[in-house]
Image (cartoon, rainbow, N blue to C red):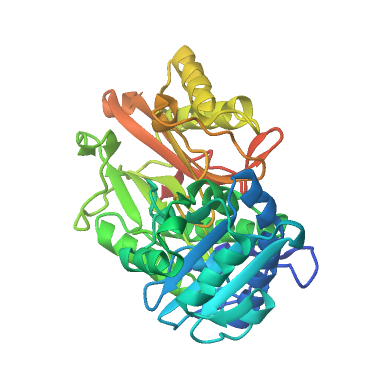
Length: 446
């Protein structure tokens, strides 16, 4: 790993702020975990965020007409919501139940039905035994009109309730209560898509690390033309994760475009290259990569050109292709997007501008944060189809600005090149803003 490169990028994320919220300093060297804070400090940080999330939950429940929200966590089968509604610690009970109730004038009531009183849980919940009669007593006390559960959603994070736990709830609460069960997805979406200002410096630092790892991989250090395979490049990225104490939420993808080869397509996208492919001079290489840390996720795509013998820069046609993708980013982020505007309208406005400029564009941007493919307003061809109601952009939300253009490159005999970029961004009153500067020049492998 290139220490100088990594440190120069990451140290940018450590300036300013109070010690309680500032990201941990970056120690020189690349020993395992050197980039991350000790686990106890990570817990303290995330539990502070949890207190703020709980403080805003009652208003969210009332906006969505939810009187009671129940999240069930099963032994060795954690619910994806557990780490965001309860302290992000291991839970070893057979079935732990986290209940949030609109108590009217009494405010938000938070009760945890647990087999084992995990350390620190009592700071967030009133603890009760994990028994059906306990839950039934809560229902009798407050009798909520709607009980929200993780059911009947198109997304995994909001349909995670198992059949066994559903049956446990019906047995505990009775058939009359079952009639009041409703999907929790609208509430879950707002809860998970609401970002906290305190998260921003930490997330910025995560994006900086993501960039550093990809930039190192797509360099003369990471790629030896004629020798390095796609599989070796992918494993290099995996090793970068372990060297810095972070994980990932998806398998890194590598795509290779080569003069004279059009590449395989699937669902309108260029397919990843086989691991056995050897990267050669003249190739255009693409990496799709992200990291997971502090319950947050990044998603990142960048492009590199492998110089031929005698070349000192990428062909002009390649540069124009990247400029087209930069123009697409500007149209979507700066001109089309504003808080409250429909994601479908943003997509339509962006694509209309590209059509007027003669740029062949694709937009498939998605919310990001608690999940890599998060809940919220996606800006893509699906949102424009209006098969489901368009969603308004939420101020402060994070998104992965994922898109591509297709450009004929004269130096490749007019062969079309896919120039794919992806950068996390956050929504301001003036549109989306990247966490770090975008790619405006191809990485060069010498």
